[in-house]
Image (tube, rainbow, N blue to C red; front, side, top):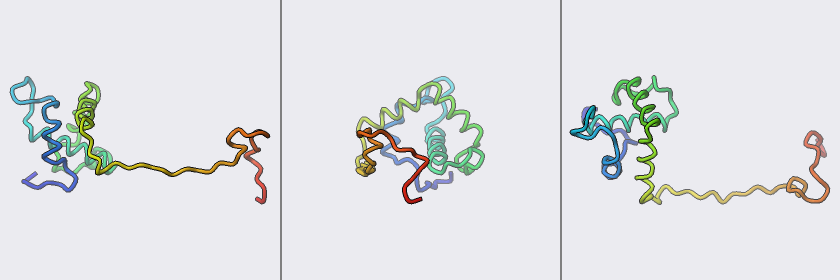
Length: 125
Protein backbone atom coordinates (compact mmCIF):
# COMPACT_ATOMS: atom_id res chain seq x y z
CA UNK A 1 0.00 0.00 0.00
CA UNK A 2 3.10 2.22 -0.10
CA UNK A 3 2.51 3.88 3.28
CA UNK A 4 -0.74 5.36 2.05
CA UNK A 5 -3.90 5.07 4.07
CA UNK A 6 -7.23 5.18 2.34
CA UNK A 7 -9.79 7.60 3.72
CA UNK A 8 -12.04 4.98 5.32
CA UNK A 9 -9.48 2.43 6.51
CA UNK A 10 -9.78 1.29 10.10
CA UNK A 11 -8.08 3.47 12.66
CA UNK A 12 -5.18 2.40 14.86
CA UNK A 13 -7.52 2.51 17.86
CA UNK A 14 -10.00 0.14 16.23
CA UNK A 15 -7.19 -2.14 15.08
CA UNK A 16 -5.91 -2.42 18.66
CA UNK A 17 -9.39 -3.47 19.83
CA UNK A 18 -9.85 -6.28 17.31
CA UNK A 19 -6.34 -7.51 16.54
CA UNK A 20 -6.21 -9.96 19.44
CA UNK A 21 -9.39 -11.75 18.30
CA UNK A 22 -8.25 -12.33 14.74
CA UNK A 23 -6.83 -15.57 13.37
CA UNK A 24 -3.36 -15.63 11.86
CA UNK A 25 -1.44 -14.26 14.82
CA UNK A 26 2.33 -14.41 14.81
CA UNK A 27 3.58 -17.85 15.79
CA UNK A 28 0.37 -19.69 14.90
CA UNK A 29 0.19 -22.31 12.18
CA UNK A 30 -0.69 -20.82 8.80
CA UNK A 31 -0.68 -17.36 10.30
CA UNK A 32 -0.15 -14.33 8.13
CA UNK A 33 1.40 -11.12 9.29
CA UNK A 34 -0.67 -8.38 10.92
CA UNK A 35 -0.19 -5.93 8.05
CA UNK A 36 -1.73 -8.44 5.66
CA UNK A 37 -4.70 -8.99 7.99
CA UNK A 38 -5.29 -5.27 8.43
CA UNK A 39 -5.09 -4.75 4.68
CA UNK A 40 -7.58 -7.60 4.21
CA UNK A 41 -10.05 -6.04 6.67
CA UNK A 42 -9.71 -2.66 4.97
CA UNK A 43 -10.43 -4.33 1.62
CA UNK A 44 -13.55 -6.02 2.99
CA UNK A 45 -14.75 -2.73 4.46
CA UNK A 46 -14.19 -1.07 1.08
CA UNK A 47 -16.44 -3.67 -0.55
CA UNK A 48 -19.11 -3.24 2.13
CA UNK A 49 -19.04 0.56 1.88
CA UNK A 50 -19.17 0.77 -1.90
CA UNK A 51 -21.33 -2.25 -2.70
CA UNK A 52 -19.00 -3.00 -5.60
CA UNK A 53 -18.37 -6.54 -6.83
CA UNK A 54 -15.23 -8.25 -5.56
CA UNK A 55 -13.59 -7.97 -8.99
CA UNK A 56 -13.71 -4.15 -8.78
CA UNK A 57 -11.66 -3.98 -5.58
CA UNK A 58 -8.62 -1.70 -5.94
CA UNK A 59 -5.40 -3.70 -6.36
CA UNK A 60 -3.86 -1.84 -3.42
CA UNK A 61 -5.84 -4.15 -1.09
CA UNK A 62 -4.48 -7.31 -2.69
CA UNK A 63 -5.87 -9.97 -5.01
CA UNK A 64 -9.65 -9.72 -5.00
CA UNK A 65 -10.13 -13.49 -5.28
CA UNK A 66 -7.94 -14.22 -2.26
CA UNK A 67 -9.76 -11.61 -0.21
CA UNK A 68 -13.18 -12.94 -1.24
CA UNK A 69 -12.22 -16.51 -0.29
CA UNK A 70 -10.75 -15.41 3.04
CA UNK A 71 -13.89 -13.38 3.75
CA UNK A 72 -15.97 -16.51 3.15
CA UNK A 73 -13.80 -18.56 5.52
CA UNK A 74 -14.12 -15.92 8.23
CA UNK A 75 -17.92 -15.95 7.80
CA UNK A 76 -18.03 -19.73 8.19
CA UNK A 77 -15.75 -19.97 11.22
CA UNK A 78 -17.39 -17.10 13.16
CA UNK A 79 -14.49 -14.66 13.07
CA UNK A 80 -16.68 -11.75 11.93
CA UNK A 81 -19.07 -12.41 14.85
CA UNK A 82 -16.14 -12.23 17.28
CA UNK A 83 -14.96 -8.97 15.71
CA UNK A 84 -18.44 -7.46 16.00
CA UNK A 85 -18.74 -8.54 19.63
CA UNK A 86 -15.38 -6.96 20.40
CA UNK A 87 -16.36 -3.69 18.75
CA UNK A 88 -19.73 -3.50 20.52
CA UNK A 89 -18.20 -3.88 23.99
CA UNK A 90 -17.53 -0.14 24.02
CA UNK A 91 -19.67 1.42 21.28
CA UNK A 92 -18.79 4.68 19.57
CA UNK A 93 -21.82 6.90 20.07
CA UNK A 94 -20.57 9.38 17.49
CA UNK A 95 -22.30 7.34 14.77
CA UNK A 96 -25.46 6.52 16.74
CA UNK A 97 -28.60 7.46 14.81
CA UNK A 98 -32.15 7.34 16.10
CA UNK A 99 -35.05 7.34 13.70
CA UNK A 100 -38.06 8.99 15.35
CA UNK A 101 -40.16 9.20 12.22
CA UNK A 102 -43.66 7.78 12.14
CA UNK A 103 -46.35 7.23 9.57
CA UNK A 104 -49.93 8.18 10.20
CA UNK A 105 -52.21 5.36 9.13
CA UNK A 106 -55.87 5.51 8.21
CA UNK A 107 -58.01 4.11 11.07
CA UNK A 108 -59.27 1.27 8.85
CA UNK A 109 -55.73 0.10 8.23
CA UNK A 110 -55.13 -0.10 11.97
CA UNK A 111 -58.01 -2.54 12.55
CA UNK A 112 -60.69 -0.02 13.53
CA UNK A 113 -64.36 -0.89 13.31
CA UNK A 114 -65.48 -1.25 9.73
CA UNK A 115 -62.65 -3.44 8.47
CA UNK A 116 -60.04 -2.77 5.83
CA UNK A 117 -60.81 -0.72 2.77
CA UNK A 118 -60.50 -2.19 -0.67
CA UNK A 119 -56.95 -1.25 -1.70
CA UNK A 120 -57.81 -1.37 -5.42
CA UNK A 121 -60.39 1.41 -5.23
CA UNK A 122 -59.50 4.90 -4.03
CA UNK A 123 -61.69 7.93 -3.60
CA UNK A 124 -60.99 10.65 -6.10
CA UNK A 125 -58.73 8.70 -8.35
